[in-house]
Amino acid sequence: MATVSPAFQENFEIGRVISLTFSVIGRNAPLFFGLAFIVSGIPQIFLQYYQLQILSLGQSGVVPDAGAITADLTFLGLYGAFAVILGGLLNAMLCRAAIEDLNDRRPQFGECFGTAIAVLLPLFAIGIVSSIAILFGLMFLVVPGIYLALGWAVAVPVLVQEREGVFGSLSRSRALTRGSRWRLFAMFLVVFVVLWVLQIPLGLLSLLGASIGPAYLAPAISAGISGTLSSVFTTTIAAVSYIELRRIREGTSIDELAQIFA
Image: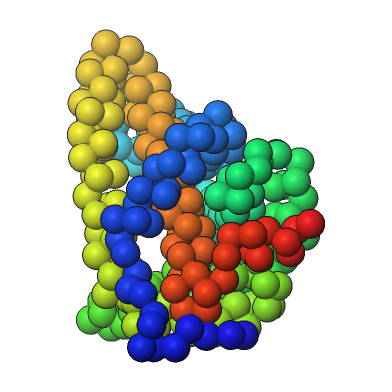
């Protein structure tokens, strides 16, 4: 693939990517938040309900027995596997939607869903491989895990857009992010802080709701809203980052990216 000469190559601009991310989300709020609520918010609500109401975990004065803990760990394992699949689907759908939007086209649910289904198995494989590798990296002084996460930050958009396969997409993501990883780290740190600030009113709402209603209801709703917000911003910013990295490293326009789906 063509690469822009280093003498003329632009830097990865955090402000530009964040601004584009908010613009894309703002123009497609019903689609983006609707997809994220279905794919991430509802599973989060069910997880909280299961843990608090069915297993009574985390409730004041309730000591869970060994059976409840075992059931919770089993459920978390199954939930984690489904979260990888659903998270990959959401990444793929929002990546397609972001490219369509930035090319002045109206993203359609059917087209976005069809794109995601077409790469479902490699999406799952990328999620498993990257999650395991990053987890092991975090266990060894944290830094290796962060390094891997940043290098693979745009692996899903690469898979959706370029169909490079599992390891090809991971390798291609590392190539695209080379030289921009510190900026990517700073950008994701900003996003993390913003999301963390948004958690404060949700946490207060959860505490207030738990004191005046069923113990599981407010925390479950709060978790659903939190999961929806996090999914929308993290997946959209990854897609926009991929588009921006292609532009500054290879001179690829949005129109050229969109032609792949034509």
